[in-house]
Length: 107
Image (cartoon, rainbow, N blue to C red; front, side, top):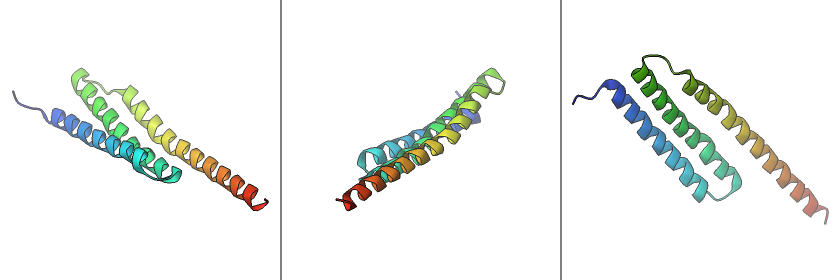
């Protein structure tokens, strides 16, 4: 049974996406402090999930014969919200750290 180029592309995207998600998850578990832990899932896992969603979009488009807009909307939402939420978390952590440092220096 011959393998189509679309199947190869979907398989490649799934493998790349799974690899990025794995690296991001390992980074979350192994990195030492909050800021470096925030970096792993934000960058690597976003790319991993994005590649998996794009693979689904390619597969759905090839099997149904029409463009799959749901997956495109998911990808757009993912790539917009992940960096924004990471930025907000980092700012909150820095503000908390600054408040703790100010509280200790006044003791």
